[in-house]
Length: 370
Image (cartoon, rainbow, N blue to C red; front, side):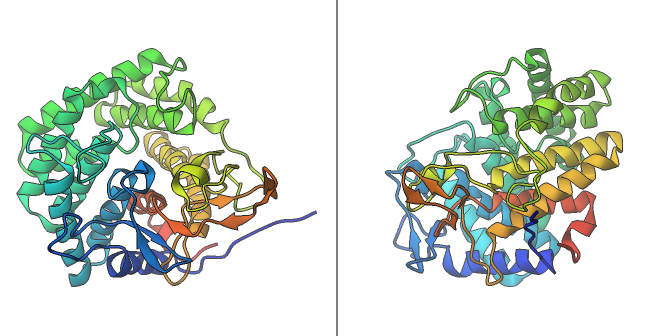
């Protein structure tokens, strides 16, 4: 009989050290370079920044926007002049190099590799910057980006991390009710399509995976929280068992409540190795879905399950602030030894984004615990 545990004495301190590592070591600082201000991958083995626009999952855009969102969230929690300086510089990079004037979002400074996934991430960055700094132009950037997303049939796409509830509440509180109303109409139309499709989900980059069912569940729940209309909650309840089926309850922090994923070490790592990745930070989307379900229903079981997902993802982050994008869990893959953390820090910071979002509902997540 065995049990594999991790101990994290101070999640808040771990997040702050990760934030410091990002702005100290992963931000490009070269005013003569179009990448100035970008947050890029970091190779922990070489102790050097890594950016490969030709390999989209190692580019200066796409999932790496999560580092900017994390810093904007952290700035709200722990005001810091260095973090503010870094994230303002990053916003300038995103708005001038990764976005068009009309809000279109690209994955590289060459404005190639456009994906609908990228739009909500950029919008989330702008929204959190407004909440951190209070500058109305960030709200305008957020609105323009979300409108561009829905102008491109975004309501047929199950994107990760669309800030539906937070956007409507923030625009309303900021005295922009017309914008809030327009956004809510987009979000509810999106929710209507999700609940109409139910378990007959459309294929995305792959045919079926946790990050299709996870966003579908969250979209339905956020529409319920926006309106109180029970049909959205019923739609989420039909999706929830399918989301739960991706995860197990094994006695190992790598696996416990962590959704199965198996290709991310290849696409996002330095060694490009196949094999199941446990934990993988997009499993944190399941944790966020559980927290939204708890918020909607008060079912304490899902707060506890969401807490397990989010805290078990902290094993991807070291005490010095360094991080890894994936743990290759199998003993061996195609004859090559497994059981290792990838040397590349890449897109794992989304796990901390979801952690800080959930901590707004459950502050105990940032207290001491294991």
